[in-house]
Amino acid sequence: MSELTIAGRKIGDNHPPFVIAEIGINHEGSFEKAIRMIDDAAAAGCECVKFQSHVIEDEMIPNDVIPGNAKESIWDIMSRCALTAEEEEKLKLYTESKGMIFLSTPFSRAAADRLERMGVLAFKIGSGECNNYPLIEHIAKFGKPVILSTGMNHLSSIQRSVDIVRKYNIPYAVLHCTSMYPTPYDKVRLGALQDLRNSFPDAVIGLSDHSLSNYPCLGAVALGARILERHFASDKSWPGPDISISMDPIDLKELVEGSQIIFQSLGGKKEILPEEQPTIDFAYACVVAIKDIEAGETFSEENIWVKRPGTGEIKAGSFNQLLGKKVKANIQKNAQIKWEQVDA
Picture (tube, helix red, strand yellow):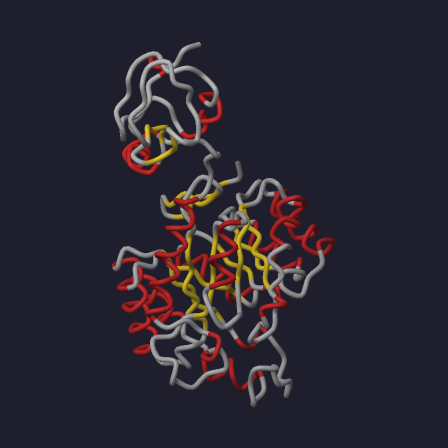
C-alpha cells in the first residue's frame, strides 16, 4: 500500500482522509486574516492548512495576464497578496502551536528555498507547476514528501514529474484536479482517480477540488482518495479571486467529519454480523400455527404461516418444506413450530 508521513501523520489507503484547508491567498496579504483562518480551521477539526509562497521577481516577469477568476492581472494579484518571509515563518509557528500541519505551495525556486529554510515537513506542488520539471527537481532534492496536483496535465506529463520524484526515492501523492474556477460538477471527473491509481500505484491518491460543495470530495473518499483539498476562507464575503470557490468554517467541519465517516464505512463484505442478532430476533419471521393443530394433521397454508419474532426454530425460508408433512403432536395457535413436531 502506498503511504507517506508528515509530522507523524500517516497518509494512505489504510488511514483516514487527510483534509487540507487551502488558505492560499485568501488573506489578500493580511497577516491578521491569515491568523483568523488558522484559528477557524483548527476549530473545525482540520489537521492541515496550506498557504502559497510567492517571491514575485523569481516567479514571473511583469505581465498583464488576467486569470479567468479575476479582474486584474496575476502580477497585481500576487504582488498584493505575497507574504514576507518573516510573516510566513510566524504563520508556520502559529499553525504548529495549534497542533496543525503547515504546508505551502512554492511558485518559484526562491520560494522553495524559503520554505526549506523554514523547515517545512513536505512540499505541495500546484497544478501550474506540475510540468515545471526544473522546479520539481529542485524541490525533490530536499528529500521531503511531495504532494503533486495535476490539473491541466495529461498522464504523460505527470509521469515525467513522478519519474523525478521517484529518482530521489521520495514518498509522494498525486491529486486529481480540474483547473476551472469554479469547476462544474460534470467536469470534476472522479473517474480520473482510478487512472492515477493505475498509472502510479506507489502514490497516495487524492482530490484537489474547485467545485462549489463538499460532495465531490466526499465521493472521492469512496473511490480511494486519501488527501482532500479545497480552498478555505473564514468569511465568504471577503474580497479575493478564490473566495467564491472556498469553504467556510461550517463547510470545513462537515468535510472533515464527513470524510471520516465515509472512510469508516468502507470495506467489509456482504455477511451477517454478530451485532445484527438482536435485530434478527425481532425482525425475522418464523413458521407459526395460525390455528390449533392436532397430531396427524397435514401442515398447510390454512394452519401455518410466517410471523415475527425471529426467535423460532424454523425460519420463513423453510416454510415450503413443511407443507404436506404430518404433524407429530398437538400444536396450539400462535406457537412457533419446531422440527421435532414435524413428521419426516
